[in-house]
Amino acid sequence: MKLLLKGIGASPGHVKGKARLFSPGDDLSDFKENDILVTRLTDPSMVQAMIKAAAIITDIGGIISHPAILSREMGIPCIVNTKKATKKIKTGMNLYVDGERGKIYVLD
Image (cartoon, rainbow, N blue to C red; front, side, top):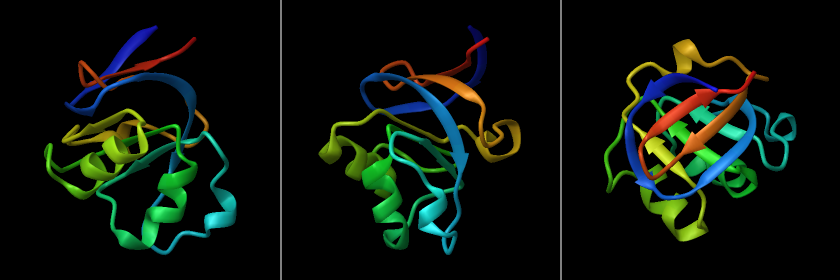
């Protein structure tokens, strides 16, 4: 594993999965169960994708932001405030998300 990004661990947990860049208005049918949702910041229009997600990673946000609160309610890892997740992570990348330490790794 190679460390890719750090952010704020907003919801604990560890998960491996495929990244999926997702923006408000994107087609939900493209988002698969257990994808890792990567976005600038979530909004209420993305809740259906969030429900399917194995983890959430955002560019901005804090521990009381929308993705942080919902991910804790859903029991999935969340890392916010990475500053550049949507620039460094590409759809399909295999990631390991450490929601406790706020670290995102690329799997070989």
